Image 1 (spheres, helix red, strand yellow):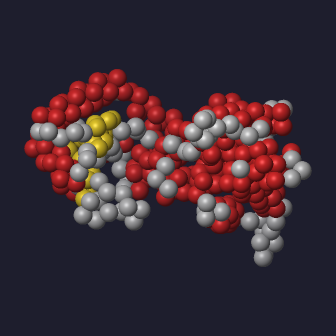
Image 2 (tube, rainbow, N blue to C red; image 1 turned 90 degrees about the horizontal axis):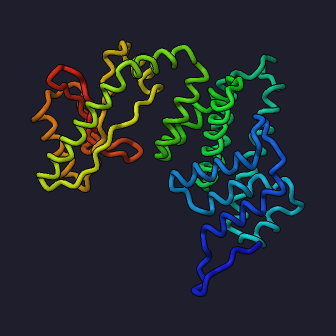
Image 3 (cartoon, rainbow, N blue to C red; image 1 turned 135 degrees about the vertical axis):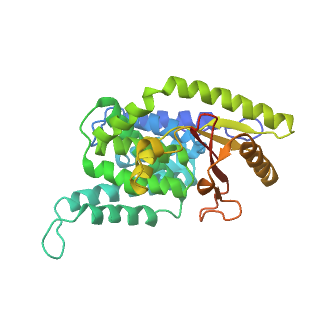
Length: 330
């Protein structure tokens, strides 16, 4: 089962991934997770998620080997012989975390606190957070678990099966913030929206309806604005990537609740994200935006002068167009 090397001695990453899947398939193809999802299908989806966020081939391969571990007599020895010690260690550590989480869930369902009352959801959530942090010495293990949890949420969304509230709450309160801390925005945003959709379906549908009511008109406007900004910056010699930012329902609801705002007062329904090579370019883009639109002074943040704790640096501004409509530009 060893991945073969070419004449230069370099192992083909695609072959390593294919070998890992072929190795695990006979062991897990007929197995299902507690959620009812087929394990091989789950591993396929996890590998795809990891590929989308730039995860290494080793991480993608581990998504299969993790679930093969329980079916092997000496999993670390067998996997190390076939794929090398580093991949074996990654698979074993991730499998250990999966095992510990499963045992913890089983214990929490029957464990009581000091006053003989069941553990509160908050205490259970805190236990999961501590477990993940305990394994965070190798961030690849945490990323594998994040991708796996996102796929579990996608599975529930696709099958329309009832979602355990504890799982949705844990995803929202532990896994999504962890993805945010690691800067994996794609997983954070999707996990937040799916979790919120399961926890508060009525509110989710209300906001989704409000967003959809003028979606076509809004998208047409944003395409024109994006092209206008792109051309203006190019004429100034600024190489910029201008994109319309995805609208995340959970972030909208959180802002509405946090600032006691009606939907109409949430300013990032229409939003652009501009990525440029230098700090000087950032301020030049800001200058153009403020010259051509009316800035809302209280909605400006300079995270370049004062970066966020996680190192994030950007300028955030909200402006009004000719009709008075708000546009957020990052």
